[in-house]
Structure formats: structure tokens, C-alpha cells
Image (cartoon, rainbow over all chains, first blue to last red; front, side, top):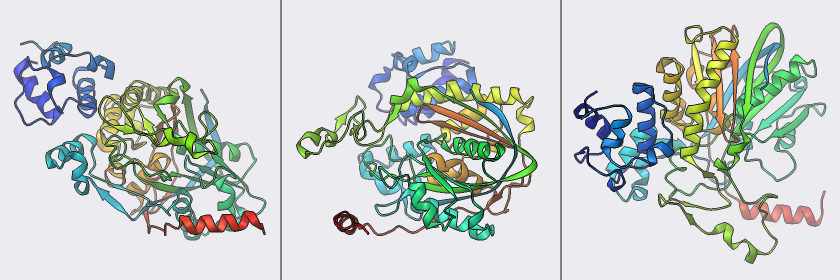
Length: 74
Length: 382
């Protein structure tokens, strides 16, 4: 999947109205909370067969880091 | 792990009851900083916007009693024929005795009936089925009434947005009887290394209340975590992330093991009734074990919230209640959570009678009256 396609998916998982960019820092997003991480883990599990944990997700810094986990390239 | 087929056991009937009182996220905007957008986001991700809540005065025992009375009456069960009453709950009426003893009397069961409580939560319904079925399969009993449920006797702080929007209150009653040719298959497990992840730390022997109030102050002080959520030592604490990780890592593998053990695949199972932790978890487990989401209902969660050990019975009643019974469907019931613990029960070729979920009006909160009653009783017991 191309990064351009992943960004709107990520935005929807977070239920965030404001635009999302690959360089955005996760910690700066109000919506980057346990609900969002739960939704993200479930999405990766279902769509990428990638089994993330909360600590895995907490270690991520930017939106690009999230995408990189699923080998989503810019 | 216990892994056994218990023979000559029929799951005859399942009834469930919830409080009439419904709370919606819509009513709680102030706890989302007044933001409709934030509340809507919580609704979408959690998968519900409402839950049933027992106000003070309505206990787990009342909800289970309502379900049990209806079951015994509608199924024409001779009360003298019930050999054992098991109550699975984490919210009993008293520190002691077992609430099941009081319910034996309240239900008009025989003095020859064994009655006891079991402390188990989200996996508790299947644990209860396992014990009831074991008693019947061994010949110790011919008829067992299993009650399971929880209602928060310590109110969940409405400001806690991790706990409050998810958990509801509910009770249930199931009847298991002896019948040649029928059986139930069970697989159970425990990982006590995670006991801290859903816990009420204070109040019992590990962190007891003291006689002097001054020594108890810390029980009632807010402890704020990194997300800004406030917790107290005498209330339920939940490490949601650890629970979510446990659920997605352990439960699908457990279900796959059960299917493998009995040479089954998802196509052979009509319905997967999972503990209704939240919609996201139910759907994720279904996806991981290859069940279509339509075969793993989450309607009970959406309507009532997470009902602890009453969630699987409520799900069965929600699904089969109008029709009246399960019609011999092949069903896998799976509970998981606090402990950490998990359990599955395979039900095949059984027509389980189910009734629509019962609504129970809230009782009167009469703590002062109860206090007077017990003071008088202790002064001059009769």
C-alpha cells in the first residue's frame, strides 16, 4: 500500500478531523490515545497480519513510523 | 489445561436480566469536555453509546434472582429438584456468607440443595457451566442452577472514561440437567501473572480497610495516571492496554486449539458467542480465528455494555430470545478477562431455551434503613 492511501485510513482510525501528514508527531495529536491504539492494532492485525502490542505502538514517534511497520512506502 | 467432554449434560435454559436504567454517552458530554465530537469518537471506537446501570439499591443478587425466578416458573421446574445452586460473581451481597445461600432461600429451593459462590468475572459464565456440568457428569447432581453476573456495588466514577462507558450491570440464570446422549466440551486456562491488570486492590486481606477512618484516607484519594484518568484503590482498576494485548494474543490461539482438538473449523460452528468485552475486541477475535463477524454477535454489548459474567447469557438471550431456543445450533461460548483467565464451551445438538432479556426496575437505595436493620439484628439476633 502506498503512504497516500494509508494516511486517510490512519486518520479514520484516529477519528481525527484535522489533516494528517507523514511527518506529524503522534504525541502531539490529541486523538493518539488508548482508543486509537486499540483501533490501530486491530487494523494491522486484520489487514497486514501484523501483531502489534501497546508497547510497540507507544514506541512509535511519527505517522511515517506507523506506516513503516506495515512496509508502507512513501 | 482442563480439556474435557462432560457427558449426559443438557444446557436446558438460559435467562438474563439487566437494570431498566440506561445511560447514554449523549447524556455525558460534560465528561468529554462538552465536546460532541469527542463523545462521538468514543462511541465509534468503543462500539456502543449506551449501557445498563444498576443504581444503588439494585444488587447482582436481585438481577440473578429476577432471571432465576422467571426461568424456574416458565420452565415449570420443581424447586425441590434443584440439587445445587452456583453463583458466579465478583459483587456478592456480603463479605460472608456466600450470596448463593441467601438466594437458595429466596428462590424457595430445598434445604438439601448445595449452594456456593465462585469469584470469577468475564470468563466466569463458562467456568460456572464447567462446574455445573462436572457435578452432573460425575453423578453428584442431576439438576444445577447456575447464576452469573455482576453489578457495581462500588459505583464506577462516571468521570473515568476508560471504565464507565464500557461496563454495564447484568445477571443471569442457566439450568443444567442430566440427559443421556448430550454433552458439553470444555477447555479452560489461567495466566495469574496478569492478576494486577483488572483488580480492586484495596478492601480485602492484601490491603485491608482499617477500623480507624484516619488510616483509610488513601483509599479514597484519586491516583491520576499518564492519560489523566483518576483511579482509587477501592475501585476497579483496569490496565486496558495489557488486557487488549492479552486478549488478542491469547484468545484466538485458545479458540484455534479448541477447534483443532475437536477437528472443527469455523464452518462447522454456527455461532461464536464471545464475552462482550467491547465491539472492537469481539470483531478482532472473530477476524483472527476466521469467523465472519455476523457469526460472532456483539449486539448485547451495543445494547447493554460489558456485563462481566452475564455477557454471554445476555448475548444468547438477545440472539435466541424471540425465537425461544437455539434450535440445535453448534455454538462455541468463550469467556476471557480478569484473572487473567479464559474458558470455552462447545455446545452441539442441544435446543437451549432462551427468553428475551428481562428488564429489572431499580430498587430503593435505603442504606440507612439497612444500617438500622443490621444494628438492631446484631444487638438482639433472632
